[in-house]
Amino acid sequence: MDDLKSWLLTAILSGYATEAFVGTSVATEQARAEGVESGLVSGIWAKGTTAYQVLGLTYLISAQRPQYFYQDDSGNQYSGGALALYSDVTSETERAEGVESGLVSGIWAKGTTSYQVLGLTYLISAQRPQYFYQDDSGNQYSGGALALYSDVTAEQAARASAISAEATARANADAQLVSGVWANGTGPGQVLGMTYNLTFVGGARPQVFYNDASDNQQVIGLATYNDLSGYVPKGGVQYGQTWDVWTPSANQVTNLTLTFTCTSGGLLMMSAGVYPFSAQPSNGSSSNTGSDVNLILDGTSVYDDNVRSATHEDVPQLVGAGTHTITLRYTANTATSGWVSQRAKLSYFFIPTE
Image 1 (cartoon, helix red, strand yellow):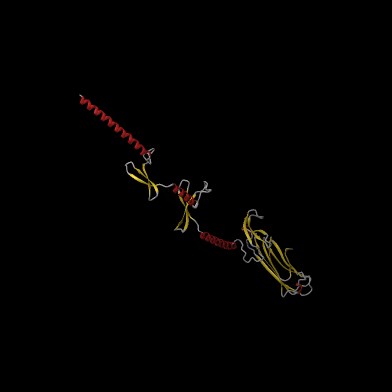
Image 2 (cartoon, one colour):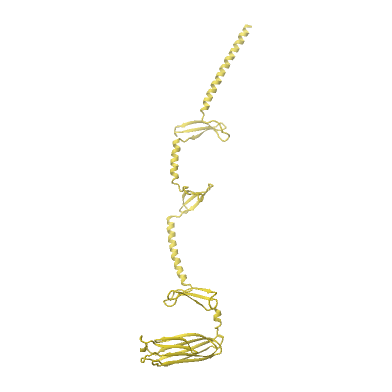
C-alpha cells in the first residue's frame, strides 16, 4: 500500500513539473513570435487576393538602396527590387521641373479650346518637322509637318511671281476688252464699258461708256437691229454728182446745186468738198478769217465750215418723198488779191427705206 501511494505521488509530482515546463515554453514562444511579427515589413491587413505580403527589407550594398522581398500564394519568394531614397525623389523632382519647362508645349492659356503639344520630331520622308498633340480624352494625334523657313521664302517668291504674271495677264486681257488703247492717241476716247439699258431714251438698246479728252465719263446709245431694219434698201437707190471750177474774188458767193426726186422716204448721204488748184492764196494768212463753205438741203443749212484751204464732209440726213435740192455754197472772204482757182465737188447717194 505504501509503495502504491509512493508511486502515485511520484507520478503526480512529475506531471505537475511537465505542465509547468510546457507552460513556460509556450509563453516564451508567444512573446518571441509577437516580437518578431511586430517588426515584420508587412502585415496582411487589406491584402485580399490582389496583393502579396512583403516578407523582408534589406539594404543592397551594390546599389546603395533598400530592397524588398515578397512571397506569392504558392510560397515562392521574389525580390521586388531596390527602393528610391528621399534624395532620389527630390533629385527627380528638380530634373522633371527643369525638363518640363523646356517641353514643346506647356499649358499656359490653353483653356478649353486647344490641346497640348506633346512632341516634335523630324519626318525623314517629308524632310520637315512634325508635331504631335493629345486631346482631353488622352488620344494622341499627329498634327502634320511644319514649314521650314525656306518654304516660306519660296512661297513669297512664288507669290510675287504669280502677282506679276497676273498683272501682265490682266493688262493683256484688259487690252482685249470692249476697247483697248491701241492707236488711241489724243483724239479718240477709250471705251470703258458696254451695257444694255432697258430704259434708254428712245427705247432699250446697248450703251457705251467712254472718257472724253478731259477724262469726263460720257455715255452714248447704239443702234439696234430694229433701228437699222427700217433702213434696208427696198429698190430705187439713186445717186448723182456734179463739180465745177472757178476763181473767186472778194465776197463772191458761188453755188453748186443738185436736184433729185424720190417716191418714198429714205437715207440721203451728201458729200461735198472744195479744194484749191494751187498753194494756199495770200488771203489765207492768219490775218484773214478764211472762206465759208455751207451745205444746204432744201433751203436749210446742214453743215457750215469756215475754212482756210481744203474741206470735205460727208453728211447723212433722213428725207421724205418728194423733190430735194442740195446746194454747196462757197462764200469768199474779203481779200482783194491772191485768189487761185477753186474746185468744188458735190455728190449724193439716196437709199429708200419706206
